[in-house]
Length: 327
Ligand SMILES: O=C(O)CCC(=O)C(=O)O
Ligand SMILES: [Fe+2]
Image: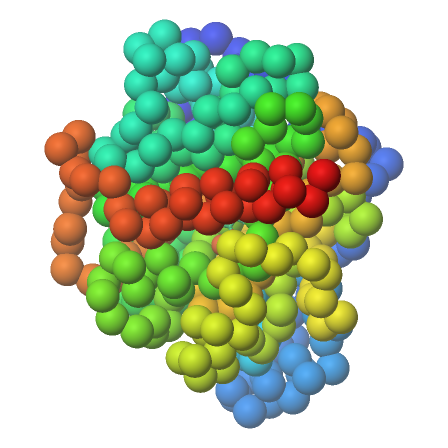
């Protein structure tokens, strides 16, 4: 494991997550007796597990974890990052945000940084790609040895695509006037891959770190279990990408505690439900780390804005217009 790097100053984020000592998550599944199960036996165990099962991240992905991922398309790992690490990353993002604002920079390696307004009416970063390229601290963190089993889950030769695709993506969601993004409509991440690779989606996993305590009624990530094994037509057309954010009877809300890690299959349909709270109380943050196995295709400052992001921006404009018409 890389030595945790002592920051020169204690890292204090502008908006630390809520940490409540009385609000601990349910214990992660105890797998001590299940580490040597055959795939068939593990699948039988998974058939009896609730969809909200939380797993412990070990040195190896376990048979039950592999079977859960194969059946449902996702895994939730109990608090893989410590409180200190979460605070340090959030403080680091605050620092990068201030740097981007000071430099008037609105794109990193061709990927637009989305700046809107925060609940106080100040410039506020809602999404940025290539976060770890601008932060040595983050780059070290995403390479930490604890994530090795997750990397191997994608492939023995998988690498962290710090300079590929959109790099490490940091997301903020908050409901306020001028907010660029209180939520995120139904989509699959596979669509993005279709744009990037010009081929139909194959297996691809998205790894997310969660920074906030989000109870099911407080919005957050919603997954449609099992939709990762649908055919290509359903991956692309089951819903209209990035348009509707209506709840689905079969969706699973992912309840998170700061430091939780999620793995989801990129072909699975998912969305982010906005918080019922306006303002800072409803703030939610996530960070996604791309693991890549394709040919090395690094981006740099001369890279063009990806077509899918231009499409995304066009869809956002349409949504804004539709919302205005509805008023
Ligand atoms: O914020 C999240 O947890 C999900 C983000 C997401 O689905 C995406 O950026 O594709
Ligand atoms: Fe997504």
